[in-house]
Length: 358
Image (cartoon, rainbow, N blue to C red; front, side, top):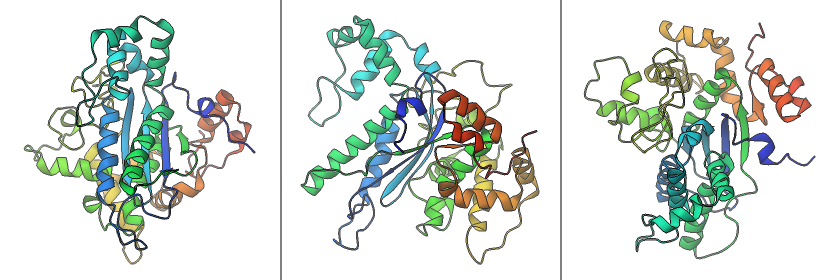
């Protein structure tokens, strides 16, 4: 059966959360050391990370976490049409011209757009509306990621042709439990692939960036990370969305970001960054053979709030990529998604998270 068009799954007019996977098509590696050719492509990991950080500063999309592996990458994204709607017409035009500039500097970076270039977009209502919509479209984010890396890799390899296999895979994450499981699955990928032993040694992951910033934090004796995540002090992870969301303290609305590094300062989980990283560390130890751990008492409420026990949680994280197809969530969330997009198969979807429907 033919797959549904992206616009029927990912609606840029709605706030949605997705897990996207883009895989390299060639035998030669996207990154890392290729045992066949003997060449190292490790530097391409930095290409991808830099590109993701750049796109986070342009799009009305929050990057929640990411992982760059040897032949594919994982990204967890949240579209923010509410943020894009709050931008002025000139802001929309400026951001679009950063993506597709009319002029470039000698080093290839975009030139500051001129007023006539901005007016060419602002003075055409249909074009402006199209550009505004695309800036909250996950498909355009993935296109701007894949095309840029493919061109650079082809130029380096002195060849032409496809660099990525087919369409990227996309999963709609419908509730906080599936989002937590997916984030942990993505951040633990290097450990499960035996590339790293711990989250703090898992290079080019969202978790590693956050841990590095925590290590540089001057006031590490203070347990609160909610306000710190929203400050300008985070050098490596400041372009990603904060982890903790606090409905009482966070302002109502799109939570516009003033730093220019990301779309908003809105979190995505009801746990602190410290709690998430500790849960990640514990989960990573459970997924490795020969390692026995006891879940810390203060982490138990995190799992219980999600309706999961320790055994079920590890099973979900370990099998997340195989269990879920187009969407992940509770039966109620899946039923609502089925009604929204007309996919009746979602109503009969398994409930691998083991969540109650009460």
